[in-house]
Length: 581
Image (cartoon, rainbow, N blue to C red):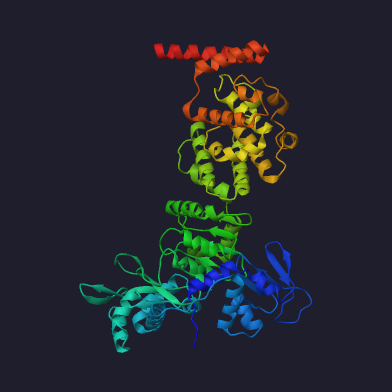
């Protein structure tokens, strides 16, 4: 009896069973970064060229080209049948294989028929393109710089009104099934073709099966672009144009907007070029590509809509970014798209643009700059806040910290004052939160182990540049060591942020933060930090601030505190004068 395994079962087994575990029982492997390296079992070699990548769920030999997943390895290496390979891997992974039910077998049979119908339609569309009826569509492709070889490779075709329905009927294909496959549509009880008088782009899955079509009209018909309807085998949120040409040897992927962009870049020699289905990049598409590639380029049209689409793509990808994954953004000129760059200019010009791609922080900053019309302190603060909020989507805390540190460095460069100015010098008018920010920093120097508990709340506050930079260094410290102690964080801060006078900070009188007078009372410290963070939401009373400074000066008799007190009183008087007007 032939055993049938559902795709869900196979995926579950591969998710639970690392490739290195299966291969490592037969081949001596040594870990090198994320990969495992060994001598290829499929050909004789003295220098290892056989790699195993658990994240990508495959093995690959750069010497002989052997490539596959856990099932393929057992089939090729131990000459097992596919069901035998699946059964062994299921046993190792703890997955129970249950026979497919009659209903599941029926569903599989129907899905296979849908794939077959779409394959028949694809063949007809391709044959039509190369006939006299398709000459205008073929001429259009040639004018757009698409070569005959690319037309063949991407199996392009064209749909002529009435041809497909007639063809399916002659082959005794069920029109009901053809409608389920998305090749036909039901209109007022009559089966009609979904695509007519259109250039047709077959959409294939990663296994090379036709799952749908994209159609483009050359005339005035609307809509200009049309995709297959959602059905059992075609889901726009999951499908990617070009995914069938995935090259697992390459670690780089390029996202573009249109089908012709994909074809033109592949034609020019680029690998792993993908396009969503005329919509924004989706979570499912991001997960699919990140299983195979770690360096992702976004190269959309050079107009404003293309920029916004790349910004949305960043939001989609950020939750899945982890150490080793890089996002890069290519901003083309307003009248350019990837297709025009390689067909009207050259492969080298496209390569040049990719090499000059912006990193994540640079791209986010440029995008936010385009949303404002005046570079004012208020707009700079808003821009920084939006970028930091976007970065909160990154789940890896250490990577998030490093990204945010880049943001602080970026804005520090555009600040005429030194980043630590508010920590060591007094402005002409007193910033009310400044001393509370100093108390916050002092609390985390005394108890760095508390930082993680308040990290998310801190990122939501509008703090001064100097404090943000200091907190960023503290955050880097927290994620870079397990020794979260006062004795080690102070030298770390002095080394990485010499502009912060830690000795002066630690020696300040705690009028504004009396909880710091009992540094061993951790619970009181936590409550005090929470109270300070609340200040940045509710505001700080000027009268309260003056009262605190009066008490502070009584204890310190420090001329600096007297200067602050005078300025606070002056500010209060100025407010009264403004109110009287």
